Image 1 (cartoon, rainbow, N blue to C red):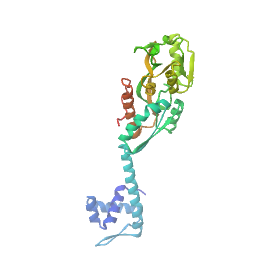
Image 2 (cartoon, rainbow, N blue to C red):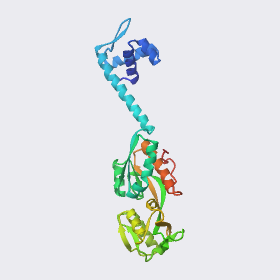
Image 3 (cartoon, one colour):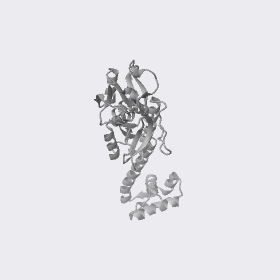
Image 4 (tube, rainbow, N blue to C red):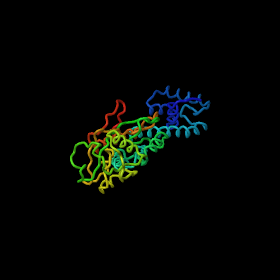
Length: 315
């Protein structure tokens, strides 16, 4: 049994108007074409839907029952089309995003607030997780996208660069390494109390690479799990810390000074990831554009160039 939406529309128009000629005028089509569509529908159903007389057209018992079902089909389809259009226009939808704690607390909220103003009908869910958990949630579909710095060899995900991130030295205001604005060599950390993240953090591995490349022994004074904890220890003048650029978002004005590192300079990308083979929904693509704009605003001059065809939509 096959029939078309056009045939259903023609049938419903005749049932509503009680006349083929009136229905044809309402639909702005020729009456013979409308009559043919209804005949084809009756043939497909193997059921007479109208009793036709010279004066009027009346629904048969089968036609009256089918009218309710057909009307529901058309109404449901119209609703589905409106929903799809709303999604495409970002009037409704949902974005589920996962990010590490510092980005989730210091960077994402501003983007979420701007996005809500632009698209109040789209909800945004935020989960603050570790890097491995973020990648697992994105691959499994529990999160639409993730934000952070991820290993280069991560199967199952695609990346959109948001900003270029560098390791920087963070020192309490007034201490020797807080003086000046130029790059600080890794060798200048020799003998200083260094606050590091634990070995579970990818940042710790980069710090170890920096020390090893400079030929300086790393002997941590403190090992902590969170960047905010490391910054608090720096504020208390308990040591210096080598942290990513985005740690600047958690620095309180005047208490901690940051400077770039050199010899070597260690850079990486902060990226938005999504599952391979799953296209970004209009809402997620719009959020990616708002997030990238916020990152560039918060960290001027560090926006990452995007490959052709990978630019997120602006909100």
